[in-house]
Amino acid sequence: MQIPFSPPYIDDDTINEVTDTLKSGWITTGPKVKLLEKEIGEYCNVPNVLAVNSATSALMLVMHWYGVTRGDEVIVPAYTYCATALAAMHIGAKVVMVDVKDDFTIDPEKIRAAITPRTKAVIAVDFAGWPCDYNAINAILADELVAEKFAPSSNIQQQQLRRILLISDAAHSYGAKYNNRVTGTLADITVFSLHAVKNVTTAEGGVICINMPPPFNNADIYSTLRLWSLNGQTKDAFSKSKAGGWRYDIVYPGFKMNMPDVLAALGLGQIRKYDSVLLTERRRVFNSYSEAFKKYPWATPPPFNKQGYESSYHLYPLIVQNITEQQRDAVIDLITEHGVAVNVHFIPMPMLTVFKNAGYNINDYPKSYALYSGEISLPVYPQLTNSQCDTVINAVVSAVNKVIGND
Ligand SMILES: Cc1ncc(COP(=O)(O)O)c(C=O)c1O
Image (cartoon, rainbow, N blue to C red; front, top):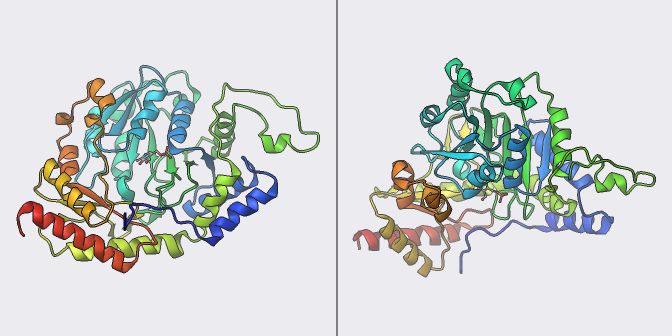
């Protein structure tokens, strides 16, 4: 493929960080992970940040800590990657899917309508890097009538918060802005993904930003979640490896979800130039696409900025208006013939076998289906040159014109 969809950004600084770790004699969870947590915390203005092995693990860990379990309900958008829902299913909860708005993010009023006394968490997804309407969602969850419905279990966290937990699935939105604030403190808990295709990557990885309101002690929550991510063991392998440090205890039936230092090093190499290079270059690509597509009446570019708000420019979900799903597929085939790799984000979950078999039906999510039918995700990454952007634009325009008969 002449223009791949999403290669990772690996420069000499990243390679040097990884090499440094390999030479240090310590490759699993240790000082590099601590540094990554600290630097992400500084960037997002959230002092307590835990790195784990994926965003999926992060979501599971947080819901487990909040005592979400069998019989409970977790509200998620129908239009997201399956991991958002699978994380809730893995801990036994029932997934309640709701439809999204024109900007692809969860519809707050649909959340309100879906809340029952069994609802324990809402996972809002910052699709493509564009933040959800957190003011509206937070207001709904704090609403007295909604809070009255909340039926806490004996879980101490639920007893203390006495409302539905808001988790931001910010897998796409590292560095995005909502109301002049970067993502990380817009919900009770924010989860970033550092998977290979994300804006910042550790190959595989996830990050939990802990932002619980008073009287919660976020530093204590960090320590608890860290123990849970490391088998419930009181000392990590790094502390145990020090002379005399061998004795440990297992205090929880924990998971194994820790991030190794050798992967954290990859992320360190990238976050230090996130604003100056990675985000700037992604913005350039976005702008060039949006400038080009605004002259075509069939094109709806994705939202990416307004006063105080900015995308992280993770995905460019172009909507080709008034075409069917089959026509969209034909457009993609033609674009591919030009050597340009594109994608569809996402196939709405109710269209996937596992969810269909569980009784979800895409007809209940008309907005999700309408968005999906016309959606084509274009390549966005810092290394994409202006002339490659032109190749992408020309390939899209020529393919669409052919399919809708303008040619
Ligand atoms: C919206 C969303 N949530 C969660 C995830 C899961 O991330 P991870 O692969 O780090 O578990 C992804 C991954 O693509 C995603 O797109």
